[in-house]
Length: 258
Image (tube, rainbow, N blue to C red; front, side, top):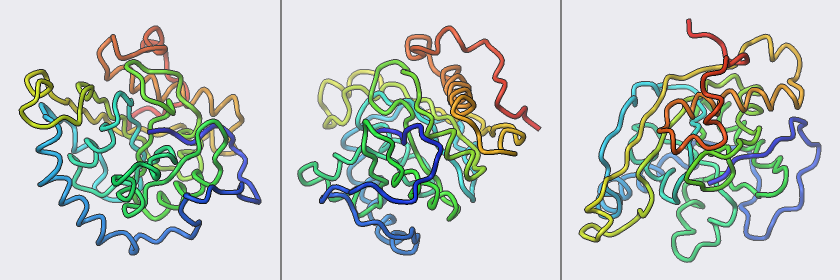
C-alpha cells in the first residue's frame, strides 16, 4: 500500500502511463458497485475467515455512514487494506502501488475493484486526480501515507493533506496491529498467536482558514505531520516510529472538535 506524493499543483497533462495501468476515465461508481458487492462477499465469507485471524474491531461507528472520507492507516503488512475492507460495512477505494496490478492471478482483483494505482518514487498526479474524483462522488478513499510497509511509522507523504485540502473530506485514523504473518491458512502456526486488532479513531478535519488560499508546501507538510501524530497516539509505543517523540505536542493545523 502506498500514498500519493507531495506536489500540491494540479497538472495540465498526465504523465505517460504504463501499458499495464488502467486507462484514465472519469470516475463512475455505477461501473463498480455490483462487482464490488460480489468481490466483498467472496472476501468476507470465503477467503478472509480462512486466511486471517481477527481478534478485535473498535470504533466502526466513527466512519461516516455516508459521504466522503479519507481512511488514514499505518501499514505493517500486505493484508492491512484487506482487513479494513473486510470489517467496514461501506465500500472503500484503496490507493495501492501500481505493481499490484501485475501480481499473478490476484492482480485481477484490484482491476475489477477499481483500486487507484499509484506510481511510487514520483509525484503521481493521475492518482491524486482519481482519488479526488472518488471523494467528490461521496465515497471513501483508503491510503497509507508512508508509501511503504513498515513495523513502525515512517514520515508520511503529503498526499493525505492535499486530498483533504482539495475536497474537505474528514480524515478517519485507523490503527492496525497484529497483521504480520497474515495471510496464513487457518490451522497453521500463525493462527496460534495473537490475531489482528483494528481501531477506528474519531474523524477530524484541518482548520478552514488553511484553505482560504491554496496551502503552501510547508503547510501541507505540517498538516501531514499533525495527521500522523493523531494516528501515532492510537498505536502502541513500538509502532509510533518517527512520531514517537511528537505525540504530546499541539496539533496546530487540526480543527478542535465541536
